Picture 1: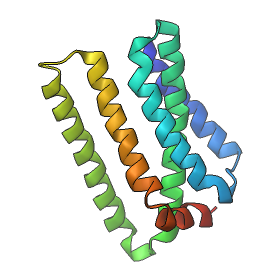
Picture 2: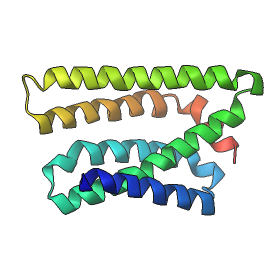
Picture 3: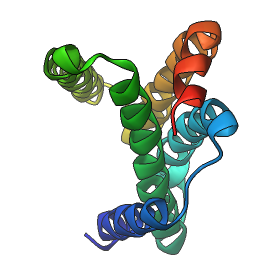
Length: 150
């Protein structure tokens, strides 16, 4: 409980930080990609660390999670026309939840045959690879959306 509690604290602090300071507009894509990859590294490796390092990793994931959410949502909300925002948000939430549930189902099935730590690491590696393929690979289209809006 204390490990995941630090994630909640990180989210709270991340929210306060984003309320007080604005990220540089021209750096948002680079920040978001770095955050996506850092979250996957932290979540893929924290089970191999001592308890206090786990807490720190989850705290950082909390802060970074708010950062990625803030950049992604503010950019897409400014980019998507007003009349389409509800549909866009609904479609995004459905795809996001479906992907998370599918990943959890597959990981749960894999845990019937494989140890927990390496399974988590492999799945977080797959998510990190997806960030490189889709976000970095689509940078010509995504960077202008992330970096254009305040």
